[in-house]
Length: 93
Image (tube, rainbow, N blue to C red):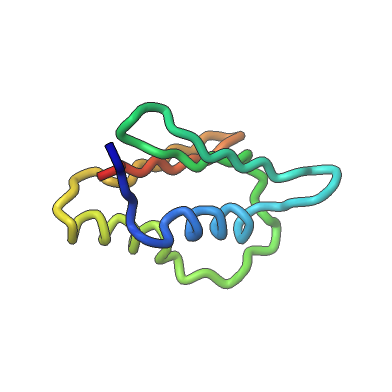
């Protein structure tokens, strides 16, 4: 069985991890890409927000959600955040 996600989805999620978090020797940014099950893929990173925010259009995740909606897939993007981690899970189709 072959599954897909919208084109450039993983790239967008990885870029968001790097754009919004500190990544230094003393505070490494850890990014994991994994499958919890056969129907999803997750990108998860330790949360260490930058003090000085880069200019952001804040459209990355909303555009990704819209792509799933246009394909008729409900709840295609799930976001989870707590004090120490941020994760986005995408439905495979």
